[in-house]
Image (cartoon, rainbow, N blue to C red; front, side, top):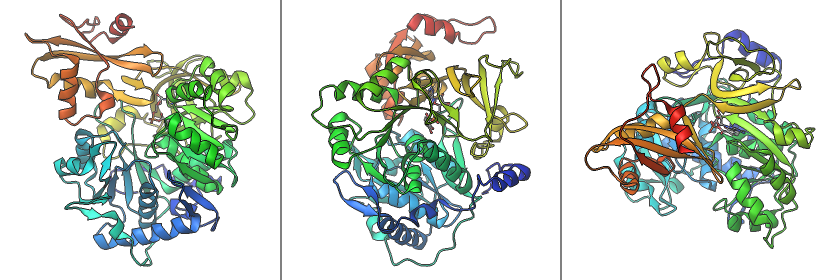
Length: 522
Ligand code: J2J
């Protein structure tokens, strides 16, 4: 693995190989089967076969190599769901350079941080997306590497020009890093999650098998492909592994997605609960036929029994999906009855997923009781990239990842997620790290103290509420929004509500009493 990553101990790695969980293949190999079958249908209905995609990836990999991108280097990829994103990912998998997957709403604060952490060889952007000029953003980043633009490049390198006559490139080592995902955040800035070819293939293969994907499946990528859920759980890569077709939509709104589901006879998709709610409501009046849907994943945030019932009544059978970019996937097995589909967050996908549930002191709780969920396994990382200090807290000395989620394990081995101990607001699946927002707020000249907590919300599950102690001129919420935007924060991190208070309540040990603030806010 490249320096700055934490490898699995040799003994575990050997076991995962012996058990066939790690197969010694690379992610690029996903395109080297199913030749003439449709692999990708773009939002405009253009169809590309597996052979087309493999050819495009080989040409783009060669062009990137000519540009100077080398195996082991990082490339920040900041593209919305698009054919260019698929080409870029597979070109980098072929070349052995690792995409760092930024999310579409990220702005210069987040990208600047990623650039500083990864020292990228290149930064791939669209010209515009949803009215935002990404070239402007690229100009503000220190050390983004070569800027490559899908669309009008202005002074930068056009992506189109990089598709060149393919050369023979040395394939990467399957044990090496294939891609970097971003953590949902706990303390400090988003951590980088190195996923190897071996471990990520294991992840997507187990998830595709659990969803019973075949060549006949058609997966609609409704959520950002740059996120682990729509990328590999089973998502785009799991669908390609099975030989199915991936379909893109310009946006996940029912207005865009429903006609595409009808046209392409989509069979599977993955949604966050807030989108599930919207789709279930829209399905009641839509003229479009949605009966091709056989499986609708709900995950990223808590999906309650009522929502599951609504989605099953209007859209299709639900699969609960509890996952994390760090690894562990717990998804409803195909034989789960309605009660388990409504009330449990599936079962860990591998028998080699070792689960521990512990109390505050780190001791295991009695079977069936709730506590913090710890995990170790064939597709769960052993450490974040270049983050030794944080790793010492986020992992136990024997390599278990502390998820920050509260869970209990049922006698059947299902997980029931009951809350979390990490200081994150889960805003409809978008993870908002409280301390990062507090840092932005404290930078405002009229804010003296700040604490951000979650408040319950019918649509998003949770929204964020900022409690601030202000100087003489308390800022308004729109002023805080403008301030955070100017600082380059993603819009979903801007507080939904703000309350100005004379002081923040403290616990007996002198920390901000967030439990009390949460109680007041809801
Ligand atoms: C409650 N909380 C959940 C669920 C994730 C599939 C699905 C989701 C993600 C994801 C993912 C939840 N109920 N069903 O990567 O492959 C919260 C937990 C978890 C955190 C991880 C996938 N599903 N969560 O959401 O890395 O708090 O991944 O630790 O963005 O989301 O966030 P993230």
